[in-house]
Image (cartoon, rainbow, N blue to C red; front, side):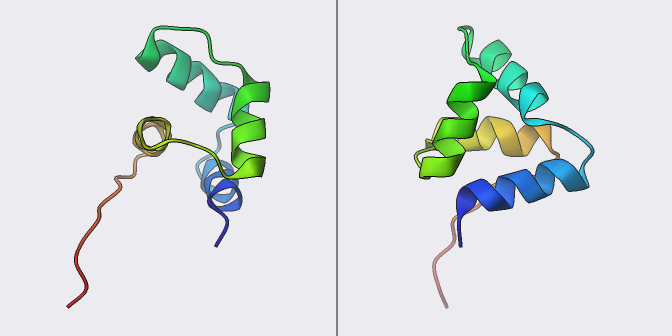
Length: 69
């Protein structure tokens, strides 16, 4: 599974763009965050946990880690 493709798919399903996601990250982090930076990180698979949480929150999702049973 490629996290970048999954995020892009969720964005499309929720009617938003990478531009809007980058803007949300910028607002939450309090520093500039470009769509080029987001696109590059999604392509390379180098998105960090904090950014992932912001993106998923913006799309109405949460991220949960649970132990296998």
